[in-house]
Length: 396
Image (cartoon, rainbow, N blue to C red):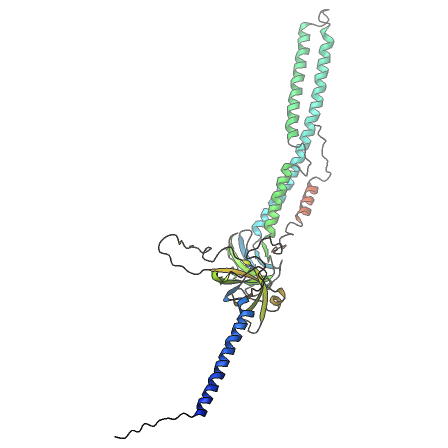
């Protein structure tokens, strides 16, 4: 048999080329490794990255302040509404009747208190009259006491004068008690500040306020979401009709592993990317670390002290405040996914806030003027039912 295997000879030139190729490849890989190490030393080790981050914000749930029937709806989901804009109207019939009743009650209370002042003045005059009668009876008795011995006045007549003094004194005491009773209703008060009138005022304000609340306005400026109310629906004070979301005041909750929190500090700069806006970079800073992990605030918190235990790496929400100008240009809807990179080179700050933050101030002035015209209405009713404002002076 013949051997067909041929020996492959390697020339020195081929070996030299292989050595050069190996050196070049080795140099390339070494350069890449050195560049990676240099990149890690200069930048990467000062970055904390996570893609477990989502946009969050305030969601104002609009509820009715009074029960009623919906008759008008002037907004829908995705629409922009401004603070104070009329959104929903309720049926006013029942509250208009209550308002009319409260106005009549205030007018009646004013007239009744005027009668109290008149009664007090009359009681005071009765006291003066009975006191004068008592003094007269006492003087008549004193003038006749010395005449009994001279038989100028009979004993029977003298007894009549004594009885008259006793009757006048009793009438005077009754008048004093009547004055005290009448004075208790009006003393230390004016017609317009009497407790009975003040109570009627408060009832009128309540009826007026309820009538105003049949018109439901937007408490803040934002976008409408989750409209659940329909015309003709009966709503209560606890039923959510819709939600308003102000997208100009959103933030990002980045969920970092507990093993990645060591270098995070408050006010560290943050770079963010949203999947919804490719190519757009957001900037912000670390506002603070949450006081607990998500599992702690869940409906059924884990009980690791009982049963078999398996360690699960927890994630802690880190709040990232965003640049307001960037949000104004490209609003972020709630729930959008974000990619977050925190620059941790500056670690001079603290992981938790040490001072009270005075910058946060979320408020509404949409309800500030609901009682703006009620005082004018009250003054009108008071003047109509006490045109001369004649109040008898009660001596205390």
